[in-house]
Length: 231
Image 1: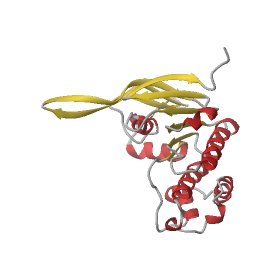
Image 2: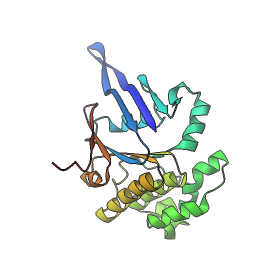
Image 3: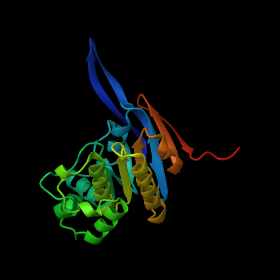
Image 4: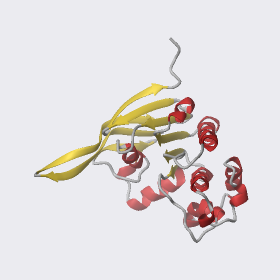
């Protein structure tokens, strides 16, 4: 479980007189195992910044982020990197392919860098579920945007992280593959007993969510269970 306690991101901005503004206002929340948590909001609302703080990628201006009993930002950089590689998976919003590696090479890259055993069979299993197994020997330049997105998802899942973060994971996908990815994420949370946190503006995500937060202008509201309880 990831638990954030009063985390915020504050930036300095000079507008005649020096002042500060909040990209993310102080928030406390939990990302729990056996649960698919969705954070909804428009572009520029602070969703990606919050995801980066929760996943150990960006130190908050104040507050703490706990993975179990471990405060992520109390660790040295080397120890934080090791913990992230072992426990946390991230599907980034932007393009993340290494052009000189095949699709399979890209998916196995995290293990190559850490020296862990390569999860070839697991990677092939996720690629098959995502419909890209036939592309394992292709180069990124040969893939469409949607195929690159599914490659990034397969890479994160192949690490078998305890907590999986995904930033707009369906942005390049058609309707069929959008629902496929959300089903895979929900199954990963419920069947593998993992915590999954998705940042998205896609309303399609709501039918798969266990909890929903909403963010606007750096301020978060929720959680609300979804689908809502009957009246």
